[in-house]
Length: 430
Image 1 (cartoon, helix red, strand yellow):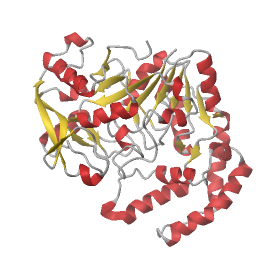
Image 2 (cartoon, one colour):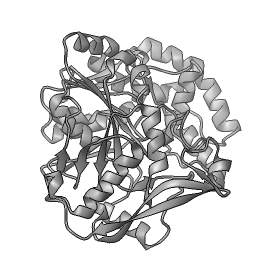
Image 3 (spheres, helix red, strand yellow):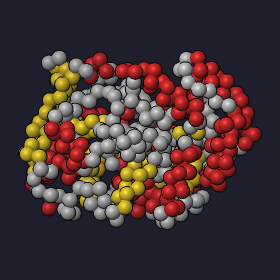
Image 4 (cartoon, one colour):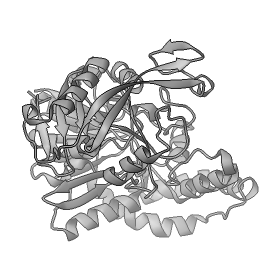
């Protein structure tokens, strides 16, 4: 049976959670492979809103096993809050439907304090992180001084690890950042009980996935953030600290690349970005305000207003290449309704030269100006449309132009936030 990877093709916030929730109906397992609680995946089911930061978006489906892979950095307090909130709303969460890799890195309180203090110290030059400790945790992972879930659930191991790393963290906090240090006891007092609660969920996720593959079960891999926030291929340094690309699904869960059969790229019908960094098609006018208001463009993790602009096909074509996309899912198409004209950036003008790929440096990207193609808009309300042929002619023309520019077929179209407000043109699992 095929396995599908869901990735964001822009700068995150494309609506991956809704698509994952929809596709989970056909998946036996859903695995989150990178990022941390800087992600915010919003689902609307029968009018009820759910926001997930760590738990895979497939958790609302009975009979589905959700996995948090080793590529994720996990804040145990946030995870337990999500579990408790789901239970309060009548959803069961336990070893039967949620497992965490024993190799998953744990976000510690000093990671969060370092993250916030660094941003404050940078002033106007801040990156725009969420302050959740994501980057500092990944730094410790690469520096081979991280604390993993296997340590969190083992009191002796946790104490030993903290005794080793805390003197360095405290020195950095006090002497460079001017922030308060931590004691081992205050961390243990908070983290040991959380480790005890989470211990039944800890397992070898790689082995679970291998068994599922051998049994022919469908697996859905869920990424966080978006392609152009990738630490290697994004708009560095205005990026996240992990690899949201489809390739991250292999290293982030422990499955071989030969077991990934389809890559579905999620595309918001326009473009948004949170925090600092370049944004060639950003609209700093009434169109930008319209997209914010109609699209309710405020971060589900931070509450920050998102920067909005026209769709950027240069960004999308790079995403198609970097991820090996086999299909597209267009989201928030309804937000463009009522606009007389819609635009697509088809190339960049860099000092008079046409460019159709993303530059590798900020210095080059800052010199790029979008080359727009204008298409007629539509005024019809499309939220009740369920068949492609019933969409307004101008809406179909817009979609067909996007498909033509990116060179990847559109497989799903979302015309509203609810699970039911989706058209499936081709099933990625078929």
